[in-house]
Each structure stands twice: as C-alpha cells, then as structure tokens.
Amino acid sequence: MRNVAPRAFWLIILSCSLFGTSRAEFITFPGLVRQPILIDFDDVPTLEQFSGPLQIGNSVGEDVTFFGSPNTGLYTNFPTWGLDSNGRWGNGRTFVSSNDARPGGLVFEFRDGPVLSVGAFINYAPNNGSDLFVEAFDSNLNLLERHNVTQLADIVTPGELNGGAFRGIVRDNADISFFFVRGYVPAADDLRFSRTSVPEPSLFVFWGICFCRLAVSRRR
Image (cartoon, rainbow, N blue to C red; front, side, top):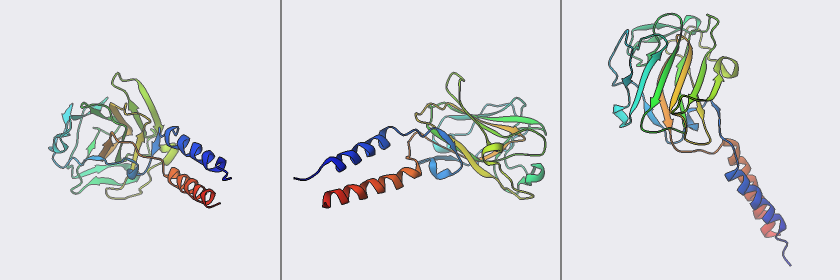
C-alpha cells in the first residue's frame, strides 16, 4: 500500500507558502516590482520654483502627479544638482528633486488607483543630519509603511556623477496611493510601480525543495 502522508504533508506546506506569505516590505531591487510601469521623466519640462502638482504619467498613459513638500520646487534636466558627499546629478539625467538646501520631500500620487509596489532610483545629501525615508500612504493619507533608508540600506556614492540606488516598498495588497521620498535634498529618477504581485525570491528555493520531496515520495 502506497504511503501518501509525505506527499499530502508537502502539498499542505506548499499551499501555505503560496497563500499565506506576507510580502509587505522595504525593497532594494527593482526586479521585485513585477511588470513595472516606468516613468523616467524624459518628457517632463525643465521647471524651477514650481509648486505643483505636475502631471508626470502622460508618457505611460497613467494619471500620476508629483509635487514637492513642504518647500516648492521641481527640477528636471538640471545641469548640476549637488548632493554633498554623494556627488551630484545632472549632465543629461532627467530627475525630480525638492528645492533648496534643506530637508524636503517628493510626493507621487497614483490617481488611477492604488498600486501594490513602488520605488525609484534615488539619492540625497547625507551630511546634514537628516535621514532618508521612503513612505507609503493610502488614499486618505493614512501611513501604511515608513522605512528609514539611511539605517536599513544607506545610499553611499562618494563624489559620483548620477550615482544612487533603487529603494521602494511592496505591499500585500494594492493600497498605496501616495509614495513619499523624504530627506535632505532628495532626488528621484525612474519611478517604477505595479499593481501585480510577485513572490518573494526565497519562495522559489522553497518551492523547488517541496517539488523535489514530492517527486522522491512518489518514486518511493
């Protein structure tokens, strides 16, 4: 008589991993934004001292707006934007940044509906005592998640031109209506967002082990 208990056990474990795994987390790899919609700001006009909000989603057919807070200002295609020890942005890079050498924030609103994951290629000026944060809010501006980038995965690009790193947030459910990047002179390019879920990378390894065990049990 064939023993089906091991196979049933691993099927239960596999089902739990598929349907019971939390994916709400801080992310540092753009590939975790599955099938992303990319806004690279190439079609955004060069503007200075601009209060916003500004429509930035026309090129991808999305209603996405941007504004700087609390200070006014939006910069794209700016020739040289200083980031203290982290170098500078400019020389053809299109980006948005808050205005003036002080703490500020970049706010992206997804007006066509909330998203599940969002992030951007970002940098900031780290020498002024203000940490860099990424934050997600729902449609009522209730805080969903806040992550201290400086403490979790700091961006260190000493003296680089256009240096930076991807930082973002992925949620269990598509409930992100606002994405904030907050710090000292924060700058962002290549905004990526998606309403499609993606499994955690570690699950692929786990699934592989499960299927191998199932195969062994079946042969026995």
